[in-house]
Structures are given as structure tokens and as C-alpha cells.
Length: 292
Image (cartoon, rainbow, N blue to C red; front, top):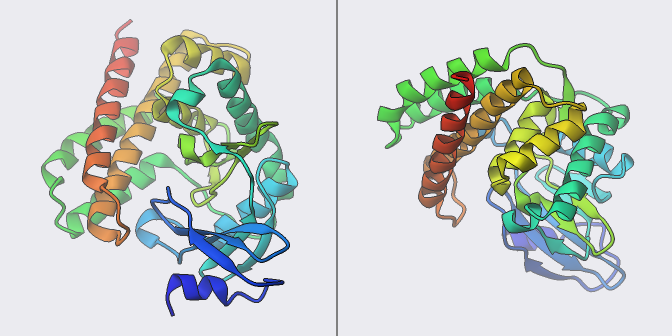
């Protein structure tokens, strides 16, 4: 049975099924389905251990995020399949999120996620510690004979320095994959989707990931920290920059692993190169902050 056949055969449809691929996914296969009465998004994907993706966790986070008013409703779930309500809206880009009004809306969703989603969680859920992910990715790359092996000792040494700089953290339940494409705007409000990597961790990871992925300016980043924490002192700024660099490194290493483990039709090599460049810039900013 093909993924499309699996989508059409789901028991939830109430009429004739029209299904078409939904572009943009780089972890799952996604489809938009009409069944006469409604539209829905169907996400097809099993557990992906090399990326620490466990679908029970995604389902729990998705349901809690809907209850918190952050994400669309979960309509159906079964092994390898998640069906969510369709949002008629526009997928955000990095350029969109650099606009003040849209950045404010996105940050508001992140704050709501950190403060409200955990209240609605049920059952077991995962933690997300970026430095564990980086170390695990390095081991996966070594086992898989990656073309990036020569870089790994240097990257792991840098990650260890960043982890020390981050220091003790407060725990929040975060999204942990704040790519611009995971924000949707329906003309009235913003939505946050795709909870594959959700888990307990540091709020600085979501904030740093948002900044790195959207290419925010230092001024925008400082305003973001002021809004989130009510301050942006030198110590917080250094810790934040360390986590931002780690977020960029994790995205680059995610792509390195995907180069050898993903069967999806996506140019992971170019994505790796782009994220390594982002990481280099973030690491330089951290080093400058450390020296002042």
C-alpha cells in the first residue's frame, strides 16, 4: 500500500476523498485531504530513532498544544498516521518573521507554548536536550561513515564549550523545531504546527532556534529576550548566544544525519552547508560576547 493509498483508506472520511501531496515536509510525508465536509492534513511517518522522533510524543504534544490554543486540532491518530485540522493560511518565511508584527505574533505563540501546553499534557513525554542530540548525532554519523567525519571532533569540542556556557536551566515544555515553515498565519492569527521534537528543555533553545532560523538581527534578539524574561543583561545574553549556536549546530547535524538516513527527495547536502554557515556566524557572535 502506498502512502496515498493509506491516506485514502483511513476510516474517518465522511465522503468522497480527494488527496494531494502537501509540499514542504523534510521529515514526514504530508497530504491535504478533502472528504466533502472538511479539509484535513495527514502526516505519514513512523518513529525515527536516529532523530529521537517518537510518534507517541508527537501525538501527546499536538493534543496538548491544541488544548492550549496554539495548534490545530488532532482529528485522528493511528500508528504511522496523524490527522490534524486544516488551517487556511500562509506558511511563514524567514523574511516574514523578521517583520516586527509577525515576529511579535510568533513570539507570543512560543511564550504561550512554554507557559500553557504542559498543563494539558497526558501520559509519558520526552525531554529535549540539544547537547545530548548533538553527541548522539555525532555517534550516528560515525557509525554511518558520513562524509562529515573529519569535522566531528572540532564540533563536539565546541558543543561542550557551549554547554558549559549555557549553565543551569529552567525547564519548560518546548516545540524545539521553530523553523519559519512551522508557523502559519490565517489572516487573523498565528498557528504553530509540527510537534515531532517537542519535549522538556530550556526556553533558550526555542528562542535561539527561532532567531537562527529566521535570521533575526541582534536588536530583534535583545527585544525578544526583554519580552520573554523582562531583561537582557550581559549574563543572559551570553547564555542565549551559546544556546543559539547550539541550535544552529543541531540543525546542521540533523541534516548531516538525514543525508545518509532519509529517503525523502530533498537536497540535504545544501541544507547542511547553509546551516553550517549559520552556525559559524552564531559561534562567532558567542565568542565575541565571551570576550567582552
